[in-house]
Image (cartoon, rainbow, N blue to C red; front, side):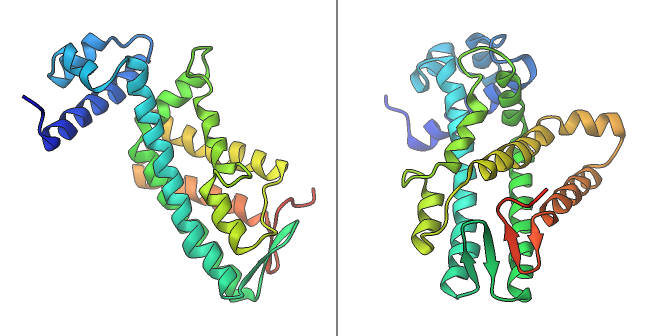
Amino acid sequence: MPFQKEETEETKGRILKVSELLFSEKGFDATRVDQIAQNAGVNKALIYYYFRSKEEILNDLVQSLYKDIEAISLDFAHKHVVQMIKDGLLDIKEDRWSFANNDAIRSFMRNVQKFYRILLDFALEHRRTMRILVFESLKNGRHHNGLFHLLNLLNKDDKNPIFKTIREADPDYTYHDNTVLFKFFFGFLPLISFAAYFDDYKATTALSEKELRNLFLNSYQSTMSYWVSGRDILIWPSV
């Protein structure tokens, strides 16, 4: 008898949730499919009905994460980059983003901060998967390059919908090597590391979740201010 769609999605979701918990606590290699089945309350054969292997379960978790990050970023690009270009409030140049007036850059920076808060809350909601990514990146296994898949969000081609969307609005838009490096090592990785170690750090410092979250956001805001010069956001600030 074929599975109903609702039952299929519920069961698959439960398997993914249990797998995420076990992978983050025990490690991917140490987690057995038998353990996933037992904790999910299903038989082992049912897991292989949904997933061909344990690797496919992890791939599903990671790809879902990346797709959501891409969707959040694309939404920001449409609402707060492309729209400002269309309204004549933003002109992207080779070395900087120039805003028409002080109100425009202040509005943009407020929206950047809101965007980062959304990303932070997303990362914290999925901190178990973030923890898996960090653990796997430190090993030489087949998933050790998982974190670097985030670089796909910084590709300079039409396969990257974020790049394509902004580039169509302003052909001067591009990614420079130093910008990519900064976004990866000072944007993505701190966010992922913070989410991965959030619970451990909170327990060690006795800070509340709200206090810890706000401290992280304040640190990010200080970093962002370094790139602002008058009505411009510099692509590579002078040292």
